[in-house]
Amino acid sequence: MSTQSFTNVQSGQMPPALARADVDGPLVSIRDLRVYFDLGGGGAFDKLFGGQTAKRVVKAVDGVTLDIMPGETLGLVGESGCGKSTLGRALLRLTEPTGGQVIFRGRDLAHLTQRELRGARRHLQMIFQDPYASLNPRMTVGQIIGEPLETFKLVGSRAERDARVRELMTTVGLSPRFIKRYPHEFSGGQRQRIGIARALAVNPDFIVADEPISALDVSIQAQIMNLLEQLQRERGLTYLFISHDLRAIRHVSDRVAVMYLGKVVELADARTIYDEPLMPYTKALISAVPVPDPKIEATRRRVVLEGDVPSPINPPRGCRFHTRCPFAIEQCKEVVPPLAEIKPNHFAACIRISPEEPHIEQVAPGDAPGLRQTGRRLAQ
Ligand SMILES: Nc1ncnc2c1ncn2[C@@H]1O[C@H](COP(=O)(O)OP(=O)(O)O)[C@@H](O)[C@H]1O
Ligand code: SF4
Ligand SMILES: [Mg+2]
Image 1: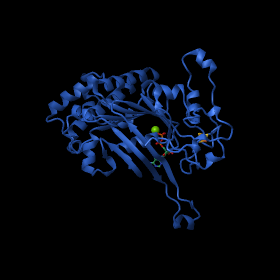
Image 2 (image 1 turned 180 degrees about the vertical axis):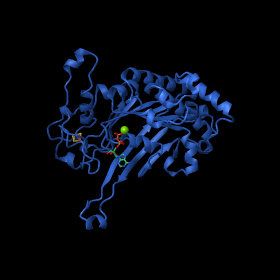
Image 3 (image 1 turned 90 degrees about the horizontal axis):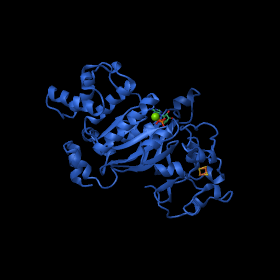
Image 4 (image 1 turned 30 degrees about the vertical axis):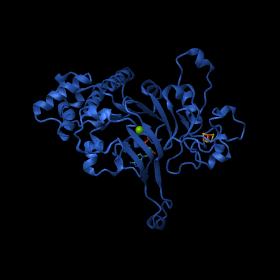
């Protein structure tokens, strides 16, 4: 990535097609990203009044390292509360990261000034779970979709804005005749289309789609997923697709990252994650998803997860999954497993597996081959 491209990103004047061709490495590089929420406590005042004496910090995202490649859909999956939305928001700096880096086209977003950040935001957009909550009920569809066009000065006149809005409405499958209508006059699926049109208005490169279909009827979900796929093909978009729904993730993703309590615990291409998960948490998650082929389904072993996800306020030491892991041994309570490459381009965080012994069921009882490995490539 050249310095030239940074300058252009800042001024917001780079033609989008050129911007994409300019990228050969990852479009977004996330390095040791941390987002902590301070809930207070631990002060002299708290102690004086017999309140909470320990400082309470929610470690919503705790050391995530990932690369997102141009044109791919990276699926981010995990149980509710594991930090998916916080990670997505931190990438766009809608939530301030506590530490680490988010490098977009070679530039660390954390170190941009507010003005520079506004310029960069044009290239980074978000689609939300609840389209109704994210659309201003007092604005017409024309105003909602047209607002970012005006903010970024991409149109000169009202007529030009409306022409562009009509075009965008057509692109997402909405009739331009409805340009003067309000959000409440549309169905859930149509409202999500409005949200998508608004995100597309500024011609972004990267879209974080946070549970974009979870609030929709099942019959509408496929339509929205197909629309997102079609837009990706036509415009070379890169997606971070966040969902707790493993079936949706399988449908749309090229690669999948599995999150557990603020950390990525497995990363591989989508097929591999579903066919050969390596890390015990992923195995448990995947085993709960029915396979369409009844013969395969009949032979599958179901791993039942005991208990709820522990609180991210005081997450378990060592491997955060040890309190629920059927394979846990004593060392799991002490060692934080790194996300290591167990098979080519297949990363997993577990001390009880290694490239030589990737299948935990075949590892000798009590053994932790991952601890013997040194110099193994980490997902950095
Ligand atoms: N603004 C905030 N203040 C305090 N805690 C937060 C805030 N936002 C999220 N959290 C907490 O961070 C954790 C991760 O939340 P979230 O990123 O929304 O998870 P997910 O999207 O995977 O369900 C949860 O424990 C949540 O309660
Ligand atoms: S490190 Fe230990 S607790 Fe964590 S997934 Fe592996 S076996 Fe389970
Ligand atoms: Mg969420």
